[in-house]
Amino acid sequence: MTWPAPVRSRPYAVAEFRAMASPCRIIAENQELAAAGESLVHELERRWSRFIPTSEVGVLNRADGSLCIVSPQTMHLVERAEFARLATDGVFNPLVLNRLEALMADVDRVSLSVSDQPIDLFTELCGIRLPRGAGFDPGGIGKGLAGDLVIELLSDLGATTAQVELGGDVRVIGENWTGGEWSVNVTDAINRTEVIATISVSEGAVATSSVLAHRWERNGQQVHHLIDPATGMPSATDLASVTAVSSELWWAEVVAKVALMAGLSDAPAVMRRHGATGLLIDGHGQCHVV
Image (cartoon, rainbow, N blue to C red; front, side):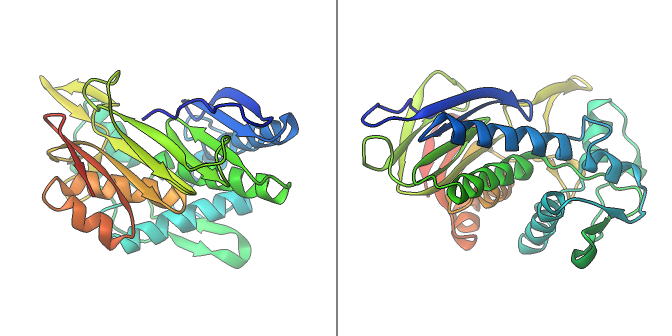
C-alpha cells in the first residue's frame, strides 16, 4: 500500500524517518507539529519494541506471570489488544510471540502452543500480568495505535489536517492538502510495483495485513508470520492480503488480520461484522471489494 505525495496547495511540513522496523512519514501544517509526531513515535517504540530489552514490553515478557507496572501508553496498548482478543473470539491473539519465535528458529515443541488465557489488567494501577509463559507481541496493533496517538497529539496541539504513515498503514484527519478527500493506492500483494486499486477516505484509517511480507523456509516449505491461534501454525488462508478501512488505525489493523485469516469466502462477513470496509487480494492477485 502506498500513499501519494500531497499536492502543495497550502503550506505543510514533512518528517520522514524510520521506526518500528518501518519507513514512516508524518505530514502536518508546520515543522513543529511534524517533529512532535515523530518524537512520539520514537518514544512509543522505546516503550513497546520487543527487540529492546529495556522496553516496557520487553520487561513484561520476561516477568513470567508477575505483575508489572507500566506507563499509561503501554496500558492503553495492552487494553486494546485484550479487547480485540475478546471481540474476535480469540482469532486475534496478542500472545503468539513464543510460538512465532519457535517457528522462526525451526523449533517445534508442544509447550509453545498459543495461550488462550486472558491478560490480567489492573487499570487503576497501570498494572499488567501476562499468563505465565506467554509473550506479548505488539505487532500491527502497536503500529496502529501509535498512529492514532500521534493524530490525537497533533489535534491537541492545534492541527486541523494531518497524515501519519507508519509502514504503509495510514491515519488522517481533516481535508487533504488540495481540499478534497484522501486517496490511497493499494499495490498488488504479489507484484508490489503495480497499483490495482485506489481507496478514497474522508477521514480515518487504512491498514493492510499480508502473508507475503514476512516469509521464510521451514522444513522445505514456505511459511509466514501470521499465526493461527487455533493451530499454532501459520494461517492456511487463501488470501494474499487484506486492506481494511476504519475510523481508527489500531482497529483497522485488527480487522485486516482476522479477515486475512478467515479466507476469501468468510472475510467479507468478518469485515462487515467488525464495522470495516476494504479490499481483499486473493492468491492469484485478484482484487475483491468489501
